[in-house]
Length: 227
Image 1 (tube, rainbow, N blue to C red):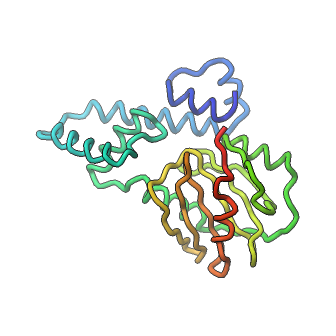
Image 2: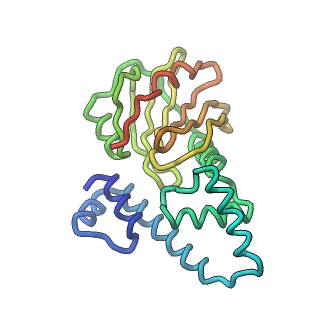
């Protein structure tokens, strides 16, 4: 089973792991961490359901549900369970998916140091990283000099280093992190960029302030396919 198949299976039933999935988990640290995170979230949901229900909470939940459904963004990576968690989180003042994703990206990139190279990474290494994240590139996006899988908010992402006009540009493809709109990101070290929605998931492009990232954004438009 691939990483993407494992994640879909554990979302469907976090407590059941088939034999082929168990074999994959024995060799994949990223998927083991993902399964643990899903099970922890599932356990938290079960505990929350057992809490006493405050007066009037039902009416407030129904109101919130109608607002969220009108935006057509309620469904998240954890299906119905995630919808319940998101609904309670929004009600009690927790950040929405876009703000949460922005914070996660800025935290991940806080100490980012990229080496500028113009020599492309070999195809085998690049394909291995993309496959681990469950994605593929369907068009030429320029020189990709480095690639590695990374875990952001318990999801596997593809971290790519791309040659820009003046230096290295970081491109992070996040198949499991949905955002509602494009937002600017800025790290504590002074890097800037954008976090943008994709047909599925999102993509972050980060670079030094003197790097024109619009060129890289254009290169990656329509370049990512989820497998």
